[in-house]
Length: 327
Ligand code: PBG
Image (tube, rainbow, N blue to C red; front, side, top):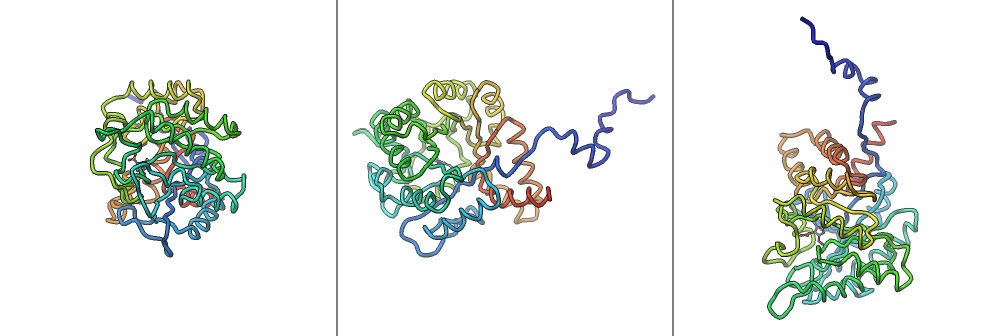
């Protein structure tokens, strides 16, 4: 006549719910991706990512300080150069926008803030691919690796504490580790984008970095249909010396995140990408979703699936919310 099990007992009031809550999101778990664009005087809004901008060097510095005072765990920097070329040469130029901005942030924030740099060529190439091309127009894995190695060293010299290779080239983590070690940067860590899918959810990012890409990235990013392959990619990255591994996008790949978190013996990150951001922003702007609740639920679900670290465009704002709820 009565149910013998009543899970609702533990949901009766906020105090009990707080006591038994399994997953938390804290500001320190959140990393803010930021865009800095060469040669502009005012920050430029990114239309498909309401609330996110391409920063000037100056506005980047200020926004970084604000994010850090909100308590975020780190910053991930992307550069948007004024000029693109076939080799993506702005990426290895110490005076290229990404490296200049890393120096700006490092001199502003020192070593108290974890500074990460996206390590990839797509922002810098005139064809928009993550690597250089061979004569047939295919992405040349091994020649790209040499450039990644150089890029890592310049980023470390510019003040990056963590480099984030996101190009999905085979062997990228090993080559980057070797070149950092050989140049006195044994302490610079590698956050490997291990399981990165050829995802439609990167759509708004292409506007954010003025991507020149015409085709797709299907020969290097993973097929969304494949889960096991993600474990293999993560294993290889760990064997090559990754200090942390990442799954990207996050919300459509929580199963992959869970699987990798179950086997990785290093911190696991997940990247809540541009399209995940824009989707919720658009629905919230229409009054279809409660913005703050939806954002916090999405972050909680990514943490629950196994992410130690979450990269999210809401990092600074969410950090503020989380602090004020606790106070
Ligand atoms: C490659 C890179 C991309 C993103 C992060 N690093 C784009 C891509 O691989 O197509 C996507 C991030 C996002 O969508 O928020 N440099």
